[in-house]
Amino acid sequence: MAFQKEVSRDLAKGIPGQLASLNPTVYDTNNFPAGKNGVTAGLAVWADYDTGVYDNAGTGKPLGIAMAVMNYAGCFLTERGSMKIEPEKTVTVIKKGDVYVDTTTAAVPGQKVFVNNTDGTFSTGEAGAAVAGSTETDFYVVEGGDPGSLILISAWSNR
View (cartoon, rainbow, N blue to C red):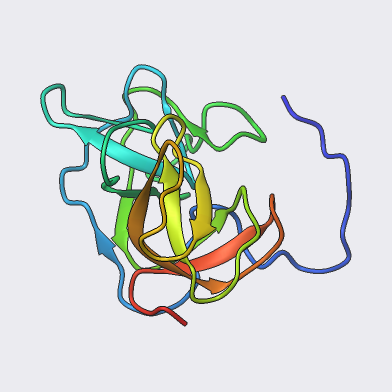
């Protein structure tokens, strides 16, 4: 179990995988469970239609982002202090909307969002750029930040 290491007097703006506005949100309707390795909320997910599961790794454009949501009473995530959704537990996938995610690069409003195909993490860059091991998504940066920080991305607007 993770132990809290810092305390802030300010309210957090959100957590990875959390909806960031009341704008419309489009969800994947397959309602597949997490694959054998589980799925981390707040990261990109791909669907394996042959086995009917979601995973944080895949080829090409991801299906969406694993939402940080309690799907049923008594179970949210695998470990306390973790964003891991247990294998075989239902994953809610956001296909379009306004979402908070962590970024591995500096993010500036208007940039495109890229996803690493091996671990589902997010980076940013100019539209059409070639980012090694990553695929460009339909999301844009709305509120930027430093590497390792929480940013707001949207599939509805580029600003």
